[in-house]
Structure formats: C-alpha cells, structure tokens
Image (cartoon, rainbow, N blue to C red; front, side):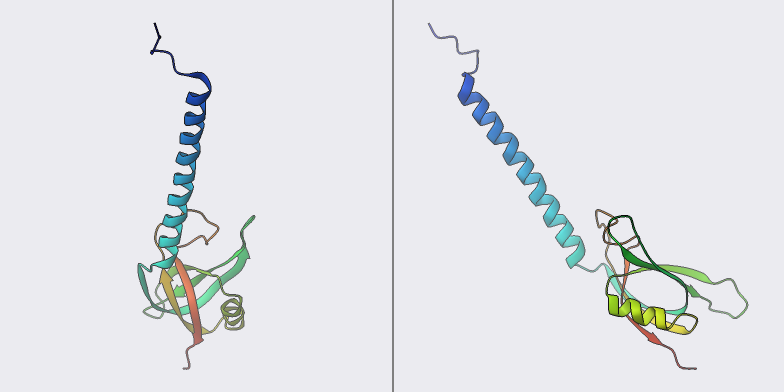
Length: 133
C-alpha cells in the first residue's frame, strides 16, 4: 500500500523551489515592464512660463535636478508654483544660466513612476528658453 497523502520528498521540493523562482522572476519582469511603460509613454506635455526661483541637484542615491517655477498671471498677485525635474545636464546648465529671468519651459508628464530615482515630481523639463521682453 502506498500512502499518497505525503508529498514525495526531493521532487516536491524541486517543484516548489522552481515555482517560487518563476514567481519571483515574473514579478521582476512585470515590474520592469511597468517601469518602462511609465517612462516611455507621456501622459501630457506642454509649456509653462515664469521665473525659476529655486533650482538644485538633490537626492541621497539618485541625484536629480529639482526646481520651482513661479508663474504670476497678474502683476502683484501671488504666484502659482510649478515644481519640475530636469534629467539632462545641458538643460540644467541652461536653467542655471537663466535664473532670475523670465523663461518658458517645455515639459513632459510621466504618471506612476515607481521610485523617486526618476525625480521628485511627475514633470520632466525637456527644454528651456528665455523670454525676450
């Protein structure tokens, strides 16, 4: 008589180990695909104009350029603050060179990025140009 209620020792453990490894691999692949999709597809893009009032490189491990654009529609009114992230060092250099001047920035919004290694905000500046008065 065979007792079929007890699992077969080594073959059961091999199957269990293989199943766990496949599950972990599947989670890693799905996380990678999700991250790629969140970065590859743009939710929105546009332009904003104002004065860069704060711009610095920050982060513990992943350093990104983070800034604030003060947008005032009516002179004398409280400005609306637009927070943004810059990845490109050339764009960051252009941003630093235009501090205190009115600029227009072109940005892309990426929603759902899984970590702050991409930046603190959803808005990633692609270009900056000074506005001539």
